[in-house]
Figure 1 (cartoon, rainbow, N blue to C red):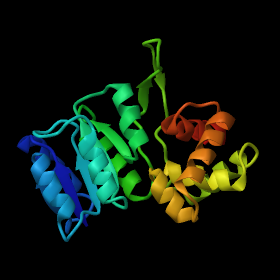
Figure 2: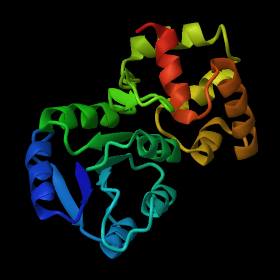
Figure 3: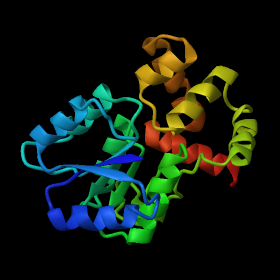
Figure 4: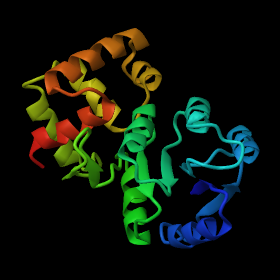
Length: 222
């Protein structure tokens, strides 16, 4: 396995490498410490199997580096590893198509569990996110789509609210796939994906991609 760590703090990089070696003793790591090195990693002939990318690095402007990476390597799972615990930031980057957001304040074991979830096809959402507009914390479960049995139970319940095609779109959305990848996997246009997403948001009474995934988990009762 090849894992890219994009972070400008050497101590963080070495700590993450040490913990992630538990995934597989043969795991290989590459490191990007600024935007130029991240772009070199994107162009590398040996792309990573997973990327852990910090929000702030030298040469980075906003979240553009995440968008650039996802556009160039849409099949590589991306996890944001950040010192920020801002719920609005979490929602923004998850909506971009990253598969997880891990605050650096979390324990190494939580990080490892979240990465295992993402590698198995799931999306990791931090267990506590602030409700918008009121400043009070509310528990939000991590999104786990790696269990085949859980996925079947979820789809059975969602079919009562959504069409079969909308369930397909939501399933791929829950895997963190962007619209263009969903369109390609289902053999439909991106415009049709957007129409399905609008219908899903209405049916689940949510406003964005992250809320749709979380709502689907609550509906499942799992």
